[in-house]
Image (tube, rainbow, N blue to C red; front, side, top):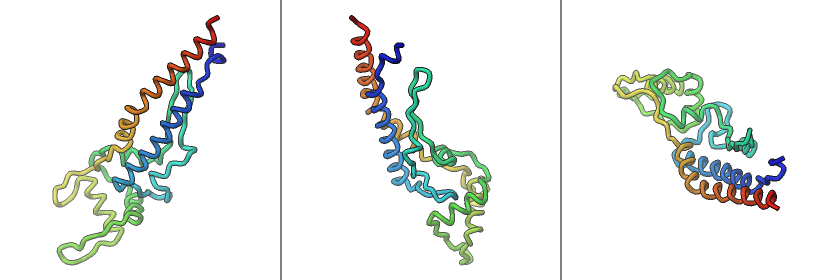
Length: 172
């Protein structure tokens, strides 16, 4: 009965705006950092359709979520040295404008050789002793942190209005 008396539309509107602003901010951050390429399905990581945004009311809680390509976590977070999937790196090399440099004998590596060299570097097996793994850009976390400071007061205000409306409805 209480849920019938509570109008969450103002809160939901604020949460939807948060989701949309997150998408725009995340997209901008990825583009500024040069993390706009894809790994195979020719969708860019930053292409986030409206259908990927979700604001759901679950068991008394609101959840704001976003569906991203599976590999977002590898762009976001640092990784330890590992051998990445060869095909994924090869696709990345073909899509990203990677310009190979000639070796000390003047040979320029093919795309397949370049993918191997990149994989070897990520695995931590570079002959130059460079550290392995990848460095994440933390764009998701940075976007979230930037928006929460702005949106928390708006969420609090909307919740206060929801509560105020509810109290006015139940008091004689």
